[in-house]
Length: 149
Image: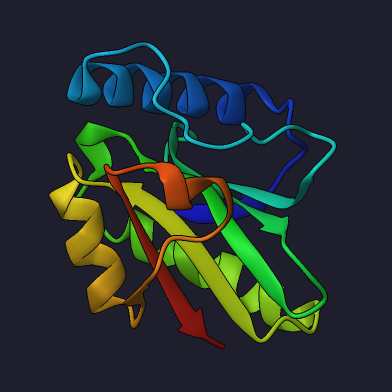
């Protein structure tokens, strides 16, 4: 497996984000459960795609700048067939390393109450639950986390 920085419109990134949105729609029973502004090429500071040894896109994630010291993890996703193989750890590590390189001291993220495996993963990865921030504060299904880098 390798993790590559890619542009927002990378075909593998597009496919993984579409799969994530489809899975989220099924979990929450509605086509769009994004409580805040959806990420775009204009506001994502960094995006990565993890690829399996055969080149298949296996996972992705990005960073959105919140302020001079804080970023937000966006569109973190691992395809079902690659879960439990270390892809999520590798993607998150790449995002955290890049955030440190930007001089950011904290990363935040939001996940939902219908994603218990995400909650377990982020907690295991050193993220702690915080009050929901920004547009997530008004979302009863949102769970927000933060990690000091």
